[in-house]
Length: 161
Picture 1 (cartoon, rainbow, N blue to C red):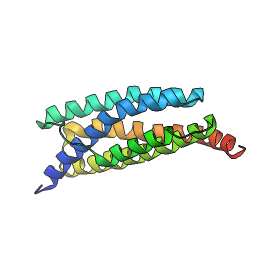
Picture 2 (tube, rainbow, N blue to C red):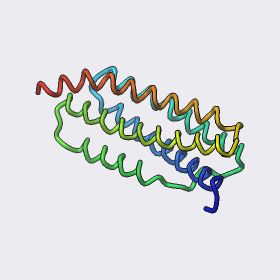
Picture 3 (cartoon, rainbow, N blue to C red):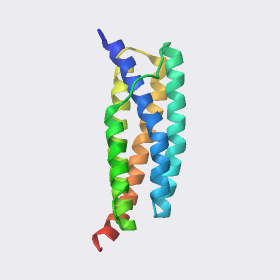
């Protein structure tokens, strides 16, 4: 990588990898959630994630770059942590609280990644993709807020255990 445009394209590939890896993981998280509102939040985010992946494919076409072929090891690590966590003997409420914690780690990674991509696109005056990136960033922030609202209730239940 020699310039900001190269770094921007790498960021897009990383984000695509994140969204691609999350599709399977979010379904697993939804399947393991016992709280109805948490399960719905995971299902809703799964639908969004599929849309985010599609947006990144569109961005790749606009930028004439191949968005595939990169593996984000940070998200892979969090997903591995989720799998390890779910293999433990957990009460329902503790499982839900833990799933929220991991989901928020993922959201924060995505928020940072999309925020960075937006900043790069703005610096590069890449108007063609800024709106798509900003839309996804807004959705990621909203999901994080929704998870936080659910966490307040779930964590209070987990504390009483």
